Structures are given as structure tokens and as C-alpha cells.
Length: 173
Image 1 (spheres, rainbow, N blue to C red):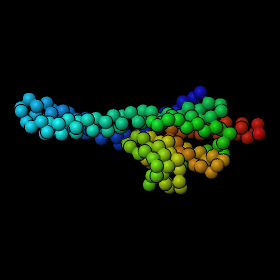
Image 2: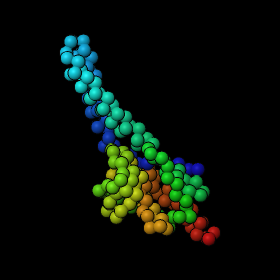
Image 3: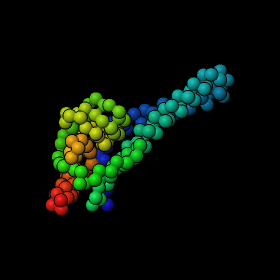
């Protein structure tokens, strides 16, 4: 089984840094407030800000790290934050290298570095499993007509492997 890492968007880095700074400020305010005798309600607000920002920053770090593509002789397996999707290679009709830009989403998750779900895009309606909102990627067209968008770091190599598997599957049929 060969694995391919996603090409991740770096836009989340400043958000993570700002979140860490806000977490530090909120925690410092809480510690100072309780030591200086400020009303407990004010100190608790700072603690809640810390906890909420900590969850958001944690998701910005953890969700993109869960996105992986694994290619075997029978299937392409896409691992993401909420689970896995397995696409049998026999169900694959076409593979194209494309330039994409994701637009409006419907029933999907979109954070910097993590774009999974259904999106409108310059390619039409796609099911995306990417680490960026725009760039170079692979468009897989399934026999059902569904378009699946991936953005691996080694897109050319993955396209070659998928096309070879698709041709071999067609020759066996």
C-alpha cells in the first residue's frame, strides 16, 4: 500500500499563532484576576475564552493531520477527521490533473488546511478531500458520475498509479 500526503494550505498558521497568543492572554488574565481579587465572574469569562480558543486551535492542528490517501492494488482509501472513504479502483472511470478553486460548500467541513465534503467549484459539484481551497489536484470521475477531488503532494505520481490501475482493471474486464 502506497501512501500520499495531502498538500496542506499554510493559511492556518497565523490563525494558530493568534489563537495561542489569545489563549496565553486569557490564561494570564485568569491567573492575575484570581490573585488580584477581581470578581470571580470576570476571571471565569477569561477561562471560558481560553477553553474555547484551545478547542479551535486544537482542531486547526489536528484535523489536517488526519487527512491521508492510501493506494492499494484494489482501492484508494481516503482517511479524514470523521472516518474513511474507500473507492474501489474498478469504480474509477477517469483521472485528471486539474487546477481547482472550491466555492460554496454544502454539508462539508472547511478550516484552513482541511476541506472535506461537497463543494461547488470551478469544476462543478465535487466531493473534496483536500488540504487547500485552491490549487493543483486530481479529479477522479467515478462510474456513478461523482467527481472526487484530491490534492496530494505528489499528484503526478498518484495520477500515474491510478491511471495504470484503471487501465489494468479495464483490460481484465
